[in-house]
Length: 87
Image 1 (cartoon, rainbow, N blue to C red):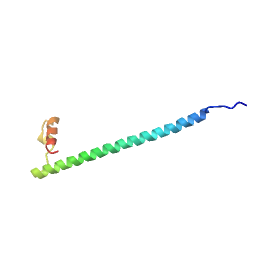
Image 2 (cartoon, rainbow, N blue to C red):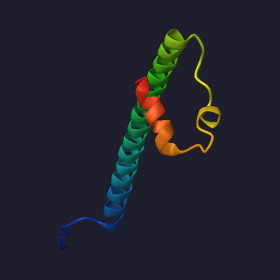
Image 3 (cartoon, rainbow, N blue to C red):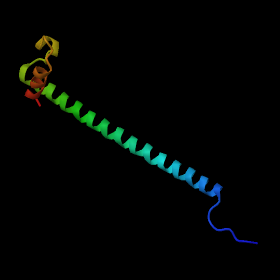
Image 4 (spheres, helix red, strand yellow):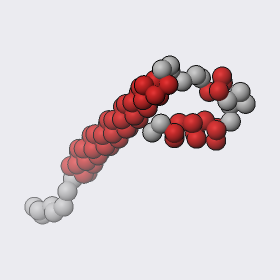
């Protein structure tokens, strides 16, 4: 009887299935990490916006008006400049 060397087809399929499952777990973990980082950046941005609004209130005694009220044409460049004044 001749001894067979190498791997059986079932073993290779099983190995590929396990590797596929591990890769999918890594991808899911990486995607979750990206979402958490994005959420933290958004929280930091909201905190900065809140602080700028509070500084405006402290300096002027009222909250800033909306972009539509202050900038009737709602020009993005004007709005950016207004936001930069208090950041």
